[in-house]
Image (cartoon, rainbow, N blue to C red; front, side):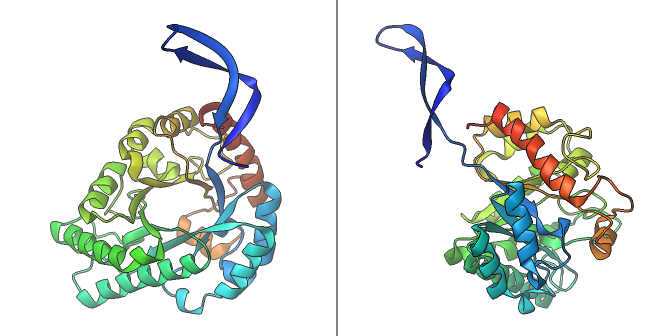
Length: 319
């Protein structure tokens, strides 16, 4: 089916210039191009080891793709053949996710470390391009979890900006966008709010750089949800939708009306992914500070959360 579909149940207000009056009529509406993803870390620590059950579950629950996390230490042994086969079997797409570490930190004063970070972003883009993905995102600008006890310095900013520019140029031919995800103050001091991510992306000034926003982090750092999304505008390349406690979307205090009004305002038609974690996967729980059950199960986070968010999509987004 093409990008329009007939909706026999929806009335449209149409202003007729020649006749100068408003008509009510049934008509064509544009289908939403939003795609729904689920984060692989909800169900497994390392997706490529046994991808089939996760892909099958994501398909059954109604997702279009899976966000796959690959760390700098995993990328050289990642089983792309097995992952490609599993995705193809169920007809699902993928989004690439990574977080830099102390050995690949683009803010570092050590040029060798920065070069390792640039190389990791290049390898990540090449990997996900081979898997059919068009985005590598996450804490791609500095070491995730690094806290210095003070704010970022001008030198760190320049190091990250220049390194990202080089990484974007190296990955441009892959067709992959590098996303910058502002995270909360307990995970990084470098980018916490959308405005700073937009500024960094604009200074990188490459066509394959974008900003990735996440409602979990926004709930901590932003004054509201609507304004940062609208201000990010066309630079918004990806959205993580997560409840304030990382439980089932719609059961907490995230202002979902504001989120979807903002996405509608900027005509957002890209990937939206549910990102959450549970205590069941110990290493993931330890790194994301999940110490208690925030939902009945990982499956409930995925299935119930998607149903709720799709109801908001119908209310606010095209299609």
